[in-house]
Length: 235
Image (cartoon, rainbow, N blue to C red; front, top):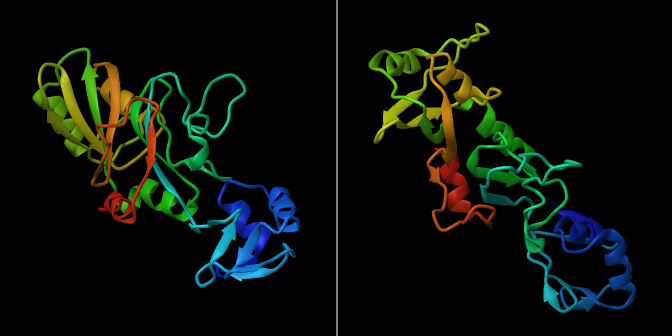
């Protein structure tokens, strides 16, 4: 961010609003490099200055990246008047303005949702041209035939005539399979499976790129990703 107004810097980190930052400055509770600053319009350097608020150093992060294990019945959107959203599930310490889910899972689909405020990064991982694979564990109503699997590998044509890019299918036990796709069309896996005369009974996203959903996260839980983990999404 570089040089920015103190109130903007503080508010961008989520814990305080700009109005609250102004009040804290009046109460001599904000300092830059050890010196109390009462003028909230003072410009500080996020890369060089040490900012403290109420005696606690502000660890500035331009963007945040959060892994959530989405439960069933929760919407992958920012807000909804009737249903709970993934943003509603965030603990207070991870809440920031402009957070959004990077790509949507259906209401009844579970698993890895990436929540961030980095629009460029989200566009990069969602664009089919980036070829970043999303991995899903899927329970089907019946086994896929070898012809079905070949069709996935070639690229399924949906019932409306849309041609999907090639997908990887790995059969598991019974009617469970792993499906990997690099696109994110509306209900894509359900529609691909339906095009084979089959039905999805359960669907869980387990990985984005090379980053796998943390098995220790219970449904509805989340945690912030490290820089190295964010990089694994792009592999």
